[in-house]
Length: 619
Image (cartoon, rainbow, N blue to C red; front, side, top):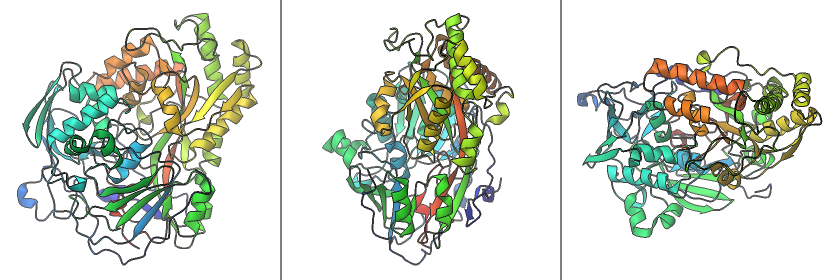
């Protein structure tokens, strides 16, 4: 498939035009007073072009002609046991870095980057700058080489052989990347228990289910997972970018100065090195010279925490920001900025509602959840799906879902840059979904359902937007509150930083609903893994039926059987309204006059907000 198919489209004054990406289902595989930066320095465009990816398994003889290209963007692996997947090494594109990119974001949180201490929303910001992971994800959801240059999977889906690059250097002089750093990093992600996949990471990389790791040499490790693994589950947390990305860190640094100190001045492998940070103000990075993949064209990248959209827009209008996290209704304003360009990526993110408090069954230790409270209208006192109590709770949740006008949210808050969605985690996988999955807008029926369930005057509920930088995340959540109020549900909006609420989500203590936006799932079953007790992160919903069926699907390596199991699981969830989606949306990036808008990111698992800053040239 031609690489040009996936090329971004620069748009000026034509905001409805978005380049279409082909999406292939791979089943197995502060305040307004916050200070803003000085204008970015202008400089002539760098001579060296941004590198492209070589095809996988190219012979060594072709290395010279592939110089300057990068291991990305070309299908390189199939999700079935086969010959090792390899990436041809290439010399990095050499540039002379000058100037500064200033990027305005809603919230970065306190800078923490060590696997034991990092949490969302820091994962995506660290991955976009200092970090790199084992693989990167292509537009068709397949994995491509990154730090891992070669891998193979045995017929039993238990034995995985990984070979990493031998030419990757850590920041701050901490030496060459080896598999010891890989094993150390994943052990720390697991033990830190802050990553949403911490438990799963332990199963794969630490041997929690009887597995083992055999270090062959500094750059090769054989992983026995102890049980079969669906490849998509592994690639999901080993991917570059996104809220689950696991950037690799230097073991030597942590041993020398301690993990806590290292977390504040981390040594990673990405094209940007952390230099300075101030909580609630900024993160400042310097370009890494002679980076293995791409030396940035700009000398400095600064992430500025500016919570208010109006303040970010003002910074962009005055040239103090080169790009920023933008709400869709800001597009007309951006189009009026001289020299500004908008670039668009479809299927960038998907928003849904997680209904917390539905913790039926037992926790990981086998104890009943102590926060199960069936005084909540959406929670049943009986976990039997055939019981009258369960039926009433389903009526309440169905009323909550059909009282929302999804199309109106898309047309207004998203300015048409998206589409209504029914089930969580299914963006890009619509061809597998059942046609009967519908939550058509019907507030009249919603009121009737509430009355039938015993709530003719409604009930109270807490609604919290997961503020992580996605377009429209807060505005859409506020719209949901208005729709619910219209049918008699009293809503308490809780606007707090995501890092503040996340601990109560992990511990299953939160009671209410969150508006939660995520990127593309390599497979819908990956999203379903948030509904099992083993998962560190929780969507607030667990049930013995889901535990049994989702756990089985997560071990299924037959593609056809996995497809059937995935549909069965989400069909049950649809019937019982265990959760539901709102919409999917495009990624729309505002690009200021100092930046050349024509660049391709390193990885497509996260395009909701700008990434790939190292490839941006001066305009």
